[in-house]
Length: 114
Length: 112
Image (cartoon, rainbow over all chains, first blue to last red; front, side, top):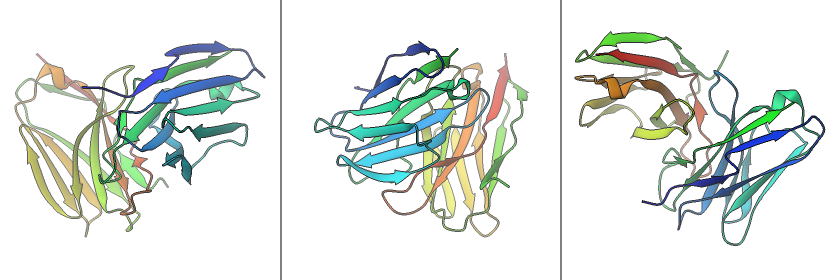
């Protein structure tokens, strides 16, 4: 079965640089979520999109922005990177008509900021 | 205080044992209660979800929700070494746009 695809899987950036993370949801899933998971931490919700519109916002820094495109893929743009942004970034998708908890997670992008 | 509290463990039990994992929460608005399993360096995988109070069984896994006590549990019967992972409880409101709030996760190890 198709799963959520995230790219790149690993990314190394320096402080103050910019990074773009991509997420391709499972086909026919219309809702995309972004989460940040620090070492030993639980995933923290960043932002979500439903039908290409932002539907909810969590603890996402102003330096980050995201969007969902017409093909439902989503990109998380991170600027002025800080050492504290080093984390695993997960994308999850959900298909129409399912409960909020029925989210399918991708393998994650490991971002390291040096 | 976090909205969802979960004992981080680690929890180590012998193969075949019954495992009990628990979470408490403070937000009465939560309606959906989930358990995710996360292997090292992998994304969380949805194991089970329940709506409101009650029990739900799926193979060796049983989820229980007691909304009056704001307490949820996951039981694993006949535990296997392959069950070794971090288990995250999670909760959300009723709205389809609701985000998930995760517990901190319990690291479980099943000894052969």
